[in-house]
Image (cartoon, rainbow, N blue to C red; front, side, top):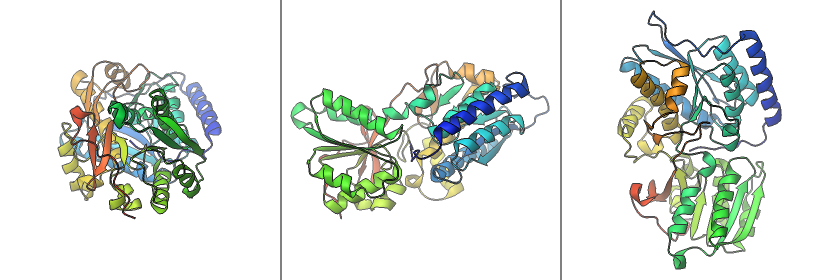
Length: 416
């Protein structure tokens, strides 16, 4: 589950552009095409994707690219989708809402791709999904799970994670509130990035904690351009909270923890909504010894026992190198988008857009990120896993039914 920094980009102008371009597209086309995916000549199944291969989201965009391309390779080696070789057309949106609108418009109207998959981030998914919906295409998307995505009430969209991203902290709240009353934290502090994803994750936890009697002693929201987190963490440390919740994305999560280390501020429980769930970036940023005991939430992890995960890891490392621990969960999410297309094809014998939309709205579907089902607007009905860094590895610790081990608390002291 990756959120990343979405602030500072032209949201209003991007959404206006999306609506204008989509409306213009309708006028040009005269009707929704839906994409033809049942040719008689055995032509490739063409899939168009816009990804952030440059700009703010480029790290995660490239991780999604690896997942998509690996799925295409594995599928083609197995004979393709219903005998048709998969052909991906991936274009760079430079992490720009304006460019993502242009890209999907061109993929559908100029490239005339059969299917489209989603970009990275809800900021880009919102305008992209509007264009895609106007043309009657299905929109399987692995990295746009914010409230603004589902508020559009689009019936063609399917988010390929266990739950909306703003629910990512619920599993941490579940764990804390499952503790006997005399073992729970008494006080809590919150540091929230000012964007539509990170802050709501922390806010959801805060509401539940306060309702359960856990007192808020510090609550600070900071702008995206905040580089030095020391003043915020210093103010938080002065309140000596039992539990700290970071409503973070990646860079600011790392900055929070570096400031805590410098200040020797070590809460008993520490949850970061994002950043700490990156198996490679987090230890590289703060040092492997300083990861110990930090909580986050996730949908896929290196030791996952979900069916297909071992093969995915073997195929991934064969193609890209590295180890299972170095695989970004975004790659597994993108790969899972392709898995859904495979499943629809197996069940129906077709992969046209209308069939994809109708079929995915029924039943439960196996993926690397669990068995998925959605409400009418593409919001998943499941829940994330609670993960914690234990002995240098991200480990599932809650709920107990899926945990590899029990949570470690209090958090060990920083290594410095």
